[in-house]
Image (cartoon, rainbow, N blue to C red; front, top):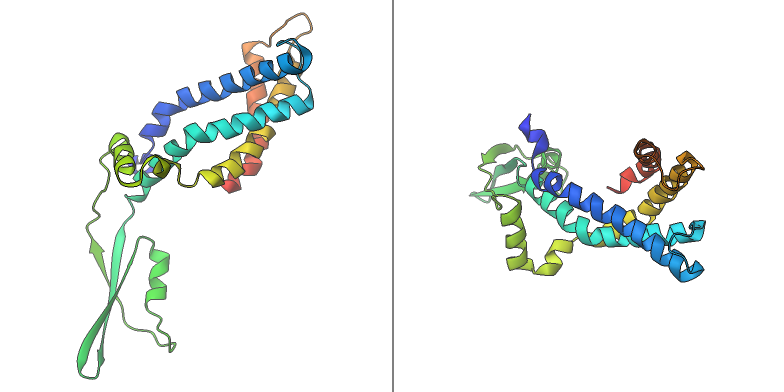
Length: 212
């Protein structure tokens, strides 16, 4: 059962800070835009204001989320079973051996096909999986030592393409639902209204699951 949670300790430990910073940044960006455009930080934001604030939030979130996702993926990938598939055949009285190493069993079928279309008998051998990282902290320090700070942001371009429009697709409905669920006699939404607005807005985020 624990195999389902490999590499999740670091994301679980950082998700509270991550969400606090993201929602705090979105709220403060809304106030800054309102103060700049209307002279009042508490002036209701228009659709354009919400779009700009949410897209800036998505861009900022990559700075926090990219290293977390990278560490999670690296810790999960080092738990994959490694197979070495070797084939032996005779060529001009010499024994030749080809080996194909893969972490994914579906790739092993390709190892047996040679250029002339014939199949070579294969024999798979399990190789003891050597762990590169002892944990999230060791993973971060290893990446910094070998790849530098830019190594923590591998794949950040794909995250920008996902999170900038994705957060706009989330925060705009979130803000609209918060306004709709806030009574006219109150200046701020109730806690239950915020929970409901977040859940309803999350339905729009599902459209971006494919980009994960």
